[in-house]
Image (cartoon, rainbow, N blue to C red; front, side, top):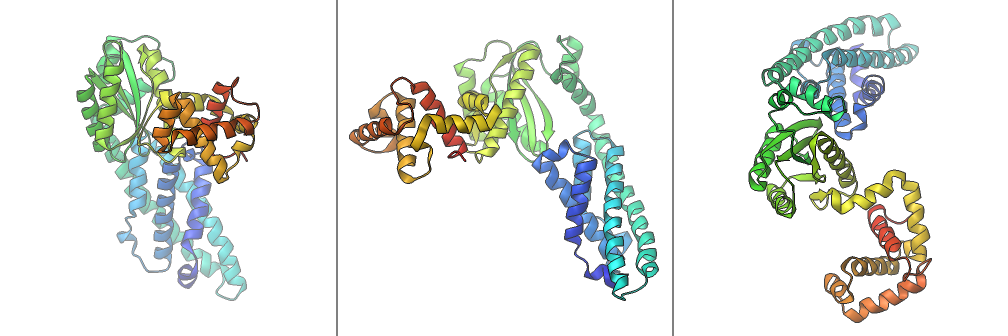
Length: 393
C-alpha cells in the first residue's frame, strides 16, 4: 500500500477531486476563477498530504496544509455555511477513494499485492486523515467566523444582501445604523481588485477623504474583489468624479467604477454597473487600471449578445474587420478621427501628419461595407467593439 502511494500522481487525483467538488458543492462560486484557484489549492494540498500519509512519508500529527486553511478562511469570509465546507470534504473523499480503488485494482492485477492489502489499511488511513483535517479546518473556520460576528459583519452582510436583492425597498434609520452608512443620498459603486481587507480599507479611506464623501460601505464580493460604495448627500458631479479619479489613480489599485445613483435603487444600479465593468475590465487585461462604466457603456450594452456584436462589426467594417496591418492602421486612424472629431487632433493623437490621416480616411470610405457619411455612429460603435473583441471569428 505504501509503495503504491509513493508511485501515484497526486496532482492528477487532486485535479479530478477539485473538479468534482466544484461541480457538486459550489457550482455558482466556482464560476469565479479566483474562488476556483483557492478550491484547487486546497484540494491539491489535501491530496498531497493524504498520499504522503499513506506512503508513510508524513505523520498525521504534522499535517497542516496551508491551502486547506486558506480555503477555510475564504469560505468564512464569504459567509458559506460550515456544513457546505464539510460536505465539500466528503465529496472530495468520495472522489479520492474512487480513484484509489481503481488504481488498487490495477496494482492488484499486476501482482503488486492483494486488494485487501492495498485497500484495507488505506481505508483506515484515509478516515483518520479526514477526522484530523476536518477538526483543523472547522476550528479555523469557527475562529474566523467568530471574529466576523464580533465585528457585526454577518448582520451587515445580511442587510446589504436584502437591499441588493430588492427585499428592502425603503431606507430606515435602523438599516443605516446597522450598516454604518447613509442610504438616503447618492451612491457611487466601485469594484476593487485587491487581495486583502486591509488594502481595501485603505483605498476606501483614501477615496472617502479625497472625494468629500460622507462615508463608505464595503463588502467582499468574491475572492480578491471588494465592493465599495461612496455616499454623498447631494449630486455627484464633475468635481466629485474628478476627485475620485485622482484618488483612484494615486491608490495604485485596480478598480471598475459605476455611475452615480440615488437612493436604494441607485445603490443597486451602481453596484451592478461596477461589476459589469469589472468583468469587462478583466477581459481586456485590466488596462487602464481604473475603468469607468461611462467609458464602456456602449460596449457593455452590445455585449449582452456577443455573437451579434461580432456580426455587427463584420457587417459595418467589411474588409476593415480583418486583422492585417493595413486594417489595423486604418481602424486606429478612423477611431481617433471619429472620437476627436478633427483630422488635426487625430493626427496629434496618432503622431502622424494630417495628410496621412486624410488619406487613410479616404481609403476607409472605399473599404467600409456601407460607406461612412451616413453611418458614422454605427462605424464608431463597430470600431470600439473591434478594439475590444478583436477581429470577428
